[in-house]
Image (spheres, protein in one colour):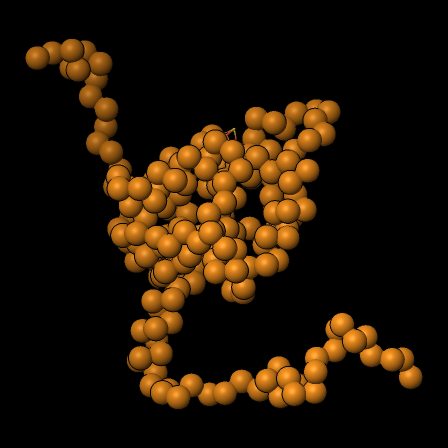
Length: 192
Ligand code: SF4
């Protein structure tokens, strides 16, 4: 019989803690639903930016676009406290192992937003013969939502967040963007 690996096996006292999940102390369905909904709507993104798209991510959290209105304001400096990775920028081959390591360190459930054309497909760095850029972060991680643009507008990043919230709760909670009225004719624009 093979000797158990001392590094991988738990000490005897921890076996029960590993396998036992206690029921909640208070198990009232409407209250559980309320807490679950709040958890689903308050995603915590990791403070993580790779290139110029990260500027748009920063602006989403600032006063004008104010992501906090939609529940996801708490950018975490530690990956272990985050459940949303917004990949904002170019993923180089050199950085790819680090991106994967960070994703693996996030506690589950966790979500990934590919933000901008670089994260989606390599963007402007995708050309024949290039050797330094990963052509889509979905080659490394499971992506939940793709937000196109070079860079995407902050409103588009908010739409990506709404999509993940909808994915979690099966419902869109925020109004849909309104269509703009038709552009007035150029001649009418010049008239006073
Ligand atoms: S998609 Fe455009 S704006 Fe975003 S990181 Fe790439 S080059 Fe920069």
